[in-house]
Amino acid sequence: MHKYFRFFFISAFFFVSSCESFVSESTSNQIDYRQEMRIFVEHISSYAHAIDPNFIIIPQNGQELLVQGEDNQSEVNQEYIDSIDGIGREDLFYGYEGDNIATDPAVTEMWLDYLTLARDEGLTVLVIDYCSTPENMDISSSRSAELGFLSCAADRRELDAIPVYPAVPFSENDTVVETLQQAHNFLYLINPAQYSSKKEFIDAITATNYDVLVMDLYFGNDAFTKEEVKQLRHKADGGSRLVLCYLSIGEAEDYRPYWQPEWDENPPEWLLEENPNWAGNYRVRYWDEEWQNIISGNTDSYLEAILHAGFDGVYLDLVDAFWDFE
Image (cartoon, rainbow, N blue to C red; front, side, top):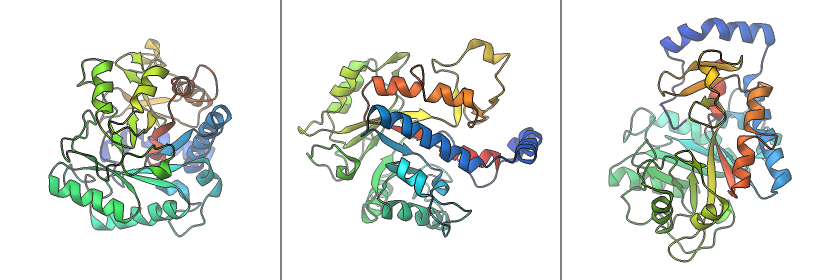
């Protein structure tokens, strides 16, 4: 996930604080945590496509869900693959062990086995590397391009600004981008806090030529409207871009409209402990029906608000939350 570094093993702190509940759930209920996340994503996809058949679904990380088994040699999970249009992967070349630090080649190669599988299955792969020096940003973009992946070399993990370098997007073009397959690059900017107003944010984006924008539904507490999303599609060179909306499905965020004040003292059963690495974010039993209904499947859901605002698709974060329970 973009909010903190995700390692292969649960930290000692996290393990000690959560071990008892994990063992209880896994032994008493025999939950298949990976399959439950697949089902959740598939439900989101099904609901969105019933309203907009062209709506784009992109899960971030959790590439292991592409296959049935425990490794990339397993049979592909075609139902899951058919429900999504792409997959995002953070830290592929830079950022896994620290910003602007090259990711261990063994980790990169392991992930690439899954990502090339995704590409060969017709999915668009979006790579987000956290690096800030021009040399590393160039390497990140070039390596992604060689593999046929879209690249965003983000110079700030906060994802709150348009990168200063390069001066123009990698593989800049004036294409009218209507599908992911037509895109050559993307911008991941989900925290607009540095901008003083919606207008300033919109003006900054429309002065660029990025092919895809991943952004938040809200500017502070104010949701972007359909007209504002329409404005954000305009590229400076006359082309157009796709505008995707960020949505966390593996953690609850206490700054979202769905959050109830009473949860601070009396949380629902599906709401678990706060993420020690990211204040205001809470682990959830993402397979719980009540949580899933908050996210999708009805007219009061978060996804419904995204669809109502006219976004071209959704970018799903914390899809790899199954690791916390495994």
